Amino acid sequence: MIWRLFGPLLAAAWMVAAAVPTPESHFGHRMGEDRKLLDWSRVVSYFEALGKSSGRIRVRTLGKTTEGRPFVAAWISNPATLAKLDRYRAIQERLADPRKTSEREAARMIGEGKAVVMITCSIHSTEVASTSTAVQFAYEILTRDTPKFRAILDNVIFILVPSLNPDGVDKVTAWYRQTLGTAYEGTSPPELYQKYVGHDNNRDWYIFSQAETRLAIEKLHNVWHPQIVYDVHQQGPNASRMFVPPWLDPIEPNIDPLIAQQMNMIGTGMAADLTAAGKKGVALNAIYDFWTPARHYQSFHGGLRILSESASARLATPVTVKAEEINQTALGYQPRMRSWNYLEPWLGGEWRVSDIVDYQKIAWESVLWQTAVRREDFLRNFYRIGRNSIERAHPGFEIPKKQRDPGATQVLLNTLRTGLVEVEETGSSWLISMRQPYSGWAKALLEKQEYPDLRQYPGGPPRRPYDVTAHTLPLLMGVDVRERGAEGPPAEGVTVTADRWPAADTETWKKVNRVWAKGASVWREPASGDFSPGRTEGWKEVKRPRLGLYRSHMPSMDEGWTRWMLEQFGFLYMRADNATVLKGNLRERFDVIVMPDQGPSAIHNGYRPGAMPPEYVGGLGEGGA
Image (cartoon, rainbow, N blue to C red; front, side):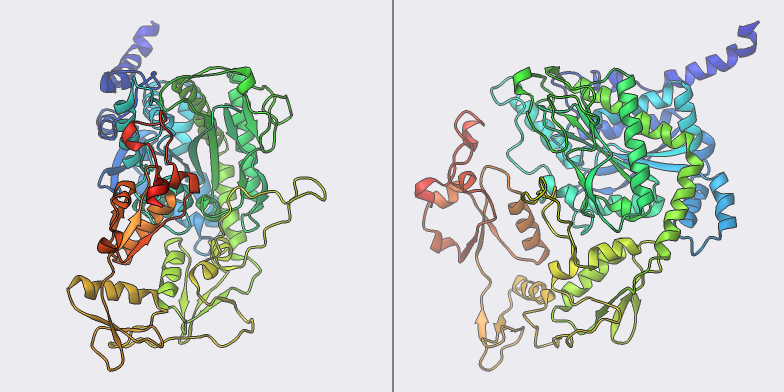
C-alpha cells in the first residue's frame, strides 16, 4: 500500500538523483582525497553537467579571467524559484533602495522574496579545499533529500562561485603535480597565483583593479544584492581548525550595527553546528578584525560578510602536527588552552584536505540553513539597513572640478560609481549626497580614517591592525575632496590642451606612451615638466626609456602590482631577473631598473638550497648587488 502511494514519487526522485553525476564519476576520485587537486576546466565541465542534469541549478559563465579562463557561478534553489529568478532579483533591487519602495510595498516583497546567499571559494589558490567543497556540496544539495536542504532550497537563492581565482586553481594544481613525490611536494608555486596581485586579490574590493574582482562586483554583488556573502579561506596548520565570526574589534564605524549583530549571530551558529558535529578546534572572536573595505565590500552594501578560515594541509598533502608544535599564542585566544571563544582546543594529530572539506560543508550548511529559517528577518533587516543609510546624518562630500590631477579624479569618481555610489554633477564640482543606500561606502572611502587607539594592554604599545594599508581615496590618489560646506583653500587646477599635457595629470603618462608606441617624438618643458607631442622652442625631446623590472624567484606582490601599474599606463618593460643582472652590462640594456619592495634576504639570498628545485634557488648575491 505504501509503495502504491509513494512508490512513483520515490522512484522519480531516485531517477533525478541518479541522473546527477557524482564527483567521483567525473573527476576519478573523491573530493578531498589525499594528493589530488582539480583542473579548472574539469570544475567548469562538472558544473555544466550539473546544470544539464538537475532542475535545481543554473550555471552561467560571467566572463573571462585575467588569463582568459571562464569565470562561472551557479544559482541553486528549487525549480519554481529558478523559473522566476528575474522576479526575485527585482525584489532584491527594490529592497536594496528604500527610496523606491514604501514600507507597505516592502512588507509585501519581504513575504514573497527569497534570501540571497553567495558563497565564494579559493580566491587564494593555495587554499585549495574550498573548490573541492563547492563540487561536493553542490552534488549533495542537489541529490540528498534532508529537511535542512529542503528548507534551504525553498527559502534561499544560493549563488555558488567555485573559485574567485580560476587562473590560480590551475597554477597551483600544475605546480603540485610537477612536484608530487619530490622533496618539494606541498610547496607554493614560485610565481604569483594571480597574475598581478597574488594574495592581494582579497584586498581589491574597494579599488576593483582586477578582472575577477570586477566580474564578481558587476555581475553578482551589484546585481543580486546578497543578504550574505560567505568567503571561504584557509589559515596556517598550527592553531585552530576553523575561525568563524564574531570578529575582533575594531569594526569600521560606517558598517551598520545591525549587520555586525547578524554576523555575530550567524558565526556563533556556525560554531555551535560544528561543535554539535564533533568538530574540535573552532575559534571565534579571534584573529581577524572588521575594519577595511578592501575585503568587506558587501557589508557596506547592506549585507553580511562572513569569513571562515580552516587550518591548511600542505596543499593536498596530509600533515601531522605534534602537540608541541601547536602555537602558544594567537590574536584573541590561546591555542593550547580552553576559553569561552575556543571551547574545545585541537591539540595535534593528522590533518588532511578531507578534514577541511568536512568542516567547510558543515559551515556552509549552517549559514544557508540559518538564513532559510529566518528568511523574512534577513529581508526585513536588509530593507531596514537601507533605510538607515539614506537617513545618515552627514553633509556629504564635494569634489571640485578644478584639480591638480584630473586623471586621478576621474579614477576616483569611477571607483565610487562602480560601488553604486550616486554622483551628482554641477557646474563646478561633483557632489556625493549621504541620502543614498551606499552612503556608508562613500563615507568610508572619502573621509580621513580615525583608527581607534587600541592597546595590547592598558598603557601598553598599540595593537597592530590586521590590515595596515589605508583606504582613504583622496589621500591615496591626490584628489581634493571636502565635506560639503567645509572651508578650504582654493583648488589647485591644471590646464590640459592639445599641445600641453601637464605632468601632474596621470592621464598624461598614458598619452605619452601612446605617442611613443607609434614611433613619434615627445617633448618636455624643463621648468614645469609638462609634455607635448610636438616640437616646442626650449623644450627637450624625451626618448622612450628602456625599463627593466626586477623579479626574483620568490613571488613578490609588489612586483606584480608594479607590473600591473606599468601596463595600465602603457610603459614597455623587460624582466630583469637574477640571471639577467648577473650577466652584467646593464647600462647597455637599461636606462633604469625598478626594484619592487621586497625583503633584503629574498632579494639577496632567495630560496635556500633544498627548499625549492635548483633552478629556483638563490638570489642576486654579492655579484648581482
